[in-house]
Length: 340
Image (cartoon, rainbow, N blue to C red; front, top):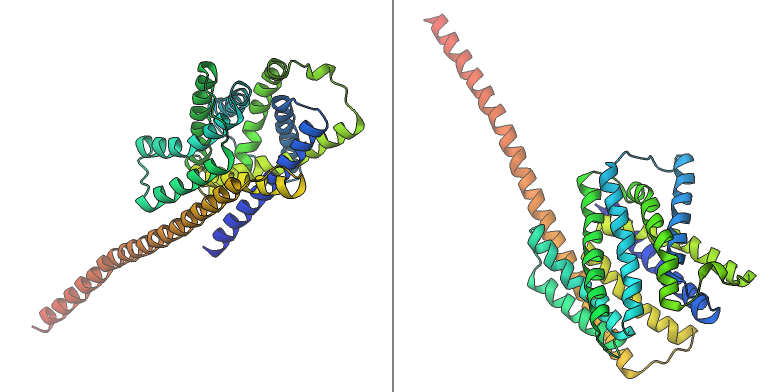
């Protein structure tokens, strides 16, 4: 159990560290170096991730497990589509509405898991998530400009993101595959979707062509750095969702948002107001309560599981005693009969 908890803690730390690093790297690449092609860059991330995992598999760092091709294909395409829709949502909506779209992923995931997977969330967990969402909303949501196309794209982005993250957890548990194996099989399909659609989406959003862009040495260096960090981001994403849950991964994502805001103020001198500070404090309180309540519920579940296991052992052992008692009684009866 302690090794499992250590693995979860390591996965969470890796996810936070790599995600914050790639946000800072990509912000420098897009804002300071003028490379705005986010969707195409994501397709390169996934291709580098697949190539890295392929080399690791050849070197026997992990074993490739055969998975149903139809499942992997649909899962990979869905993941690729969700990334493209999130980028389109950002392009068609204000930054504030885009942040609201990301905030809506948690309650929608809770709804889907409750309705379709019959998963129960306690009132304490729901309250902590509510606090978290309020805090992140105060810290990051500024303007809310609505338009019909942007709203439709945001709804589709929420649905596809929630379903893909739930499937990431479900497939690993149902098919008994590791996060590395699932990522290795699905990454080529995700990359293919974004490699085809990425340049079109980016050209539509930026009015620039990724293939005619002038690539200076420093831009190429940051692209390579971004792709290398993305290997860790993609790996840790699948690892965290597999070891915890889609909701926990989203909670972790909002922790990253708070850290990015703090790093942006500290390192990049982004504007930072009292509203940002209050929002981050409320969000951290919500995250702390969520972690505390989850730990309490997991301990209760472990105690119940242990008591059930002990009851099963007692039931399994009792027939053996009864059988032995019967044999001894029969032996005594035979000895009495022989004496008679």
